[in-house]
Image (cartoon, rainbow, N blue to C red; front, side, top):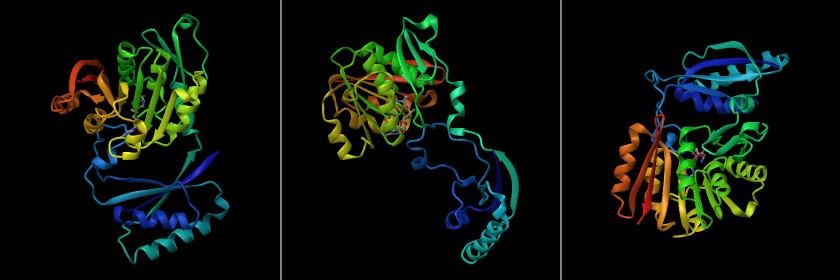
Length: 318
Ligand SMILES: C[S@@+](CC[C@H](N)C(=O)[O-])C[C@H]1O[C@@H](n2cnc3c(N)ncnc32)[C@H](O)[C@@H]1O
């Protein structure tokens, strides 16, 4: 199906008012492009450590919206123009030119799936739930994953670094906390490697559904992997739900700045002698994470591993 895309050139200061005006006339799912740099708060919780290079912010912005049924087009354009006239009384709406182009209704949510194929991390086979087990990998430990809209196919270097560290430390008594669980892939890997139970947290609500579905795909009873939405770094309720000094291993594959913020709090939840396996750390941030861990009297770094540009640091709680 083809959609008609309308792009309105305007200013950053008018974007909020234009979004609500479009919403009021029944246009949903708009796209905003501007050159406003992302703040630390914006990047927190997103899996980006290297910010995109943007041209200087000149205060202009583009607001795009899509129309499927063109029979009502004249009316829509009229309403948009009337809305812009009103907004122009309060803020500078800039150029306010509207350009038109056609776009395909592609299945953006699912299109990435064609690139997710079975692969191995040493003796572990990770495969999408919808693929069959390749004959040559029949003897491997199987993890089946569909991340849905959560993060974590296992293909990222950082996930593989964490899986290799889990392989070294997990045993039949291991109680695991998986911070930033996403699809649940690290917790599920730990359970497949024999761990007793997992407590997972994520800021992303999609993680809750994804973990539930992936437990089912891997025939793991739901009571072995409890997952909650929230931030263990600063939410007392999540901290209490996780419990204190009760984990043999904490694993967190997030981002260097988040690992730095997490390393203080996580020590309250790990047993003495327990391990803190981290990744999501781009090599330029390795020293920052190490400095934070070295300054924490509760932690000693025991190992650093690398894959591509990515780093995994494993520390022990003293
Ligand atoms: C790189 S993904 C890792 C997913 C999965 N564990 C893996 O290794 O593939 C990072 C995840 O951490 C989550 N996240 C970011 N900050 C967080 C925080 N403070 N607490 C819990 N989850 C967080 C994100 O929503 C995202 O799902």
